[in-house]
Image 1 (cartoon, rainbow, N blue to C red):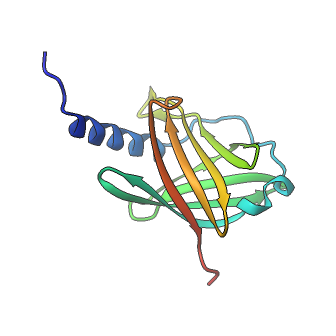
Image 2 (image 1 turned 30 degrees about the vertical axis):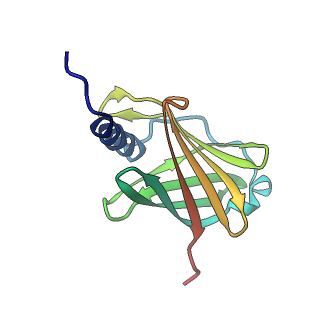
Length: 144
């Protein structure tokens, strides 16, 4: 039996994580979170996720959609994005959950937890309820 070196395993897991994050979203529960409960999070953000292979940049747009919070997460360079509708508050945090499917196959659930930190948001990505995690920082895009 061959054992995969840790670095190769981490890279494989990272590639899988990114594929799942950017796969089409399977319908999930509509966000019931009122925008009044998430004012600090609304806006267009640059999200930089730190990995062993470097930084992975995503666009994160958190918006008011009919009085409820909605979000879009994507990578313009890769030409992909997805809508996130399972959005809740947990204490001071905003939690975005993905009910995913990767090429027709069930994939581990992902959550993105955002915590206000001054003018930025600290980010924690958790795959399969913590089997793999990555951290990052979201900075608000300048208007214009």
